[in-house]
Structures are given as structure tokens and as C-alpha cells.
Amino acid sequence: NGPIYDLEAVLPGMTARGLYCHSLDDEQCAVEDVELMASLWPGAQLALTDGLGHRLIAQDAAMIERVVGFVN
Image (spheres, rainbow, N blue to C red):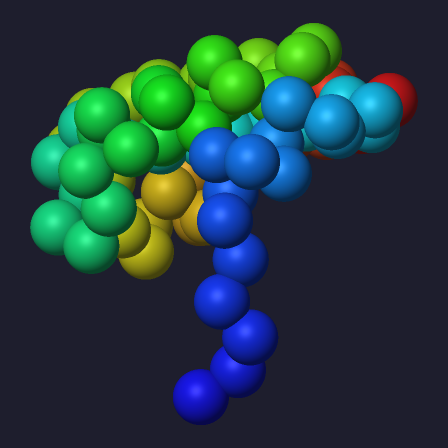
């Protein structure tokens, strides 16, 4: 096991921009957890979609476009 991080303590101090991409039907991560993390990270954005589960979100053309736009 690796180190355990207290994200609720660390995220408010983040200075980089962040983008959370999440599908509402993700069977691995609850949307409430992602919403909390995004709300705690100053400047973070939350991109929500549905129907892509935990893995297909990384292959979705619209989500890839969103990530590319965020990075640019």
C-alpha cells in the first residue's frame, strides 16, 4: 500500500488549474465525491457526462475535446 493522502486538506491549497471528468453512471467513483473534490480545489472545473461509466469516458470524443480545450 502506498501513502494515504487527505484530499480534503490538500485540495484547498492547489494553485494549478484542474479538470475533473466524470460520468454520472461511474460504478467506481460516486459523483458526490468528485463534486466535493472539485469544490475544494480553487479554480477546478467539473465536466459531467452520463452513460460512459468509469472507463469509456476516456474514449468519448466530446470529453476528449473538452480536455484538449482545457489544456490549450
